[in-house]
Image 1: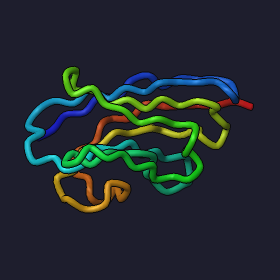
Image 2: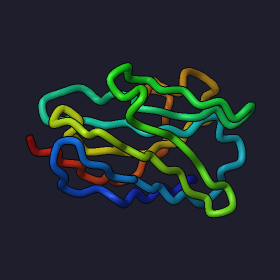
Image 3: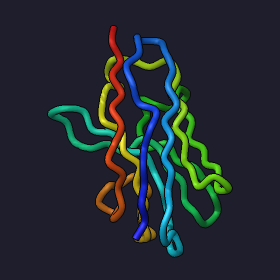
Image 4: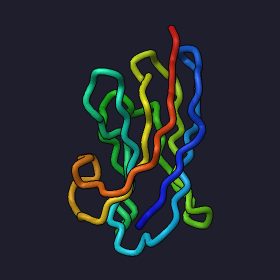
Length: 125
């Protein structure tokens, strides 16, 4: 069992920045990837960015966030981060972090068993 707790969401104006955090705990042995996802009202869940535990490579799943969002992690603090700059109204969504032990694509939410409760990000124009 892996527990994940997101924080850092909020309301900002377009062009602003937010940093999301995801604290993880529990039995993370066997975890193959961890990632951020988001879901806007009426839209499908979308992979944002993640990392493969073996090798430590980072992947940005959504072209729309490349160059604006930065994924990072601090293993000493058992925390993932998502630094979001130049926010746009279309970034408005509930953001979730998740952990997977499937070994498959880090960007596919179907591969993830453990999810946090989410943190809301609202960007106004």
